[in-house]
Image 1 (cartoon, rainbow, N blue to C red):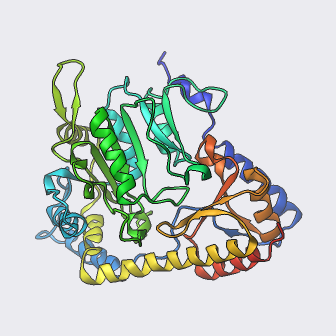
Image 2 (cartoon, rainbow, N blue to C red):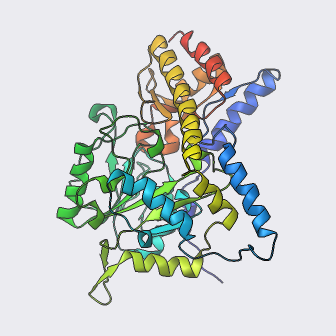
Image 3 (tube, rainbow, N blue to C red):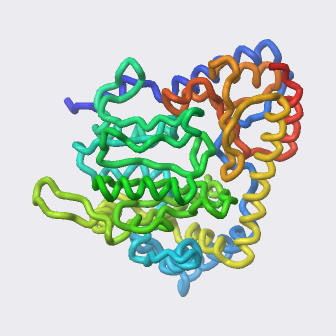
Length: 410
C-alpha cells in the first residue's frame, strides 16, 4: 500500500472557508432577500483590456493556418515575451537581467509552490506571519515544515511576525533560516518596503548565506518612488534572490494564468551530495523541462501585448481603478474610526478589530454592512484580530460598501 504525507491531515486548509460558509448560510436563510458585497476576494473584477483581446484573437487566427501554426512552445517561454519582460520590467529600471534568467510560467502561485522541487528537504524556511498561506502549505507538502504545534506554528518554520507594533515589517531573524519568503507589497497587510528596508534583508541574506524567494505579484500597484518594483533594484540582490511575477492582478490574467520567475545566473545553492555549488537556474530549467509546459502561444501573445504602448496605458487604467477603490475604502474606514494598514501601494487593507477578534469584526461588517471580508486567521496565527478588505471589486459596489462602513457605530 502506498504511503501518504500524513502531515496534510494535521491541519484543515479550508477551516476558515467552512466557518465563513456556515455564517453566510445561516444569515441568508434568515434574510433570503439580502445581497451582500464581496470584498474578501483576491480575484479581479475588470475584464481583459482591449490590447490583450486583440492579441488573443490575432494569435488564434495564426494557430488556424499552416504557415503560422505553433505547437509546443520553448520551455522558458517565447523569445518575444522574454524580450518584452527584460526591456520593460528590468532594463528600463536600470536592472541587469538577461532573457536566459527569465522563465515564463502559469503564474506566481504555481512557481512559489513548486520551487521546493529543487530545494533539499533539510532546509529551514522563514516566512512572514501573517502571509499568503501557499508559502507555508507548499512546505508542508514538501516535508520541510516539521510538526504542527498547539500554537498553530510548524516546528521547522521560522515565523517573522508582522504586527502593528513593528509597523507590519518584521525584524531580521535571530534564528537563521536557510530560505526566506518575502512578499512586498504584502498580502494581506498591504505594506510595502522602501529601498532602505529591503536593503537590510538583502544584506542579511548575503552575510548569512540565505536564499530569498521574493514575490513581486503586486509591484504594478506601487505608487511611491522609494519602493522598489523588484528586489534586483537593491545592490547584490542578484546573488541571493529569486523573484516571482504575475500578470493576474495588474492585467486580469487570473483566468489566463501567466507570469514569470527570475533566477539570476549568480544565485547558487550547495549540494550536500557532491559538496559543490550548483546554479539554481540550471536546476529550475531541468525541473521545468521534466514537469512543466509554459502557457500557450495565445496566452503568451496576450501577455506580450501588455508591454505595447497602448497595453501599458490600458493596464495602468485597471490599476488606477482598483487603487481608487482602495482610496474610497480608506476614507470610509477613517470615518468609522477603524485602524488599518495598506491601500497605498497595495489593493489590500488590513483592518484591526476593535474587539481583538477577527470574527467579531467579520460579523460586524457582514451583519451590519452586508459585506464579506477575509478573517485574519486565513493568513496565519498572527492574522488573528484583523480582517482583510480587497479593492478588487466593482467600483459601484465599493462605493456602496464604503457608505455602509462609514455609518458603522463601533
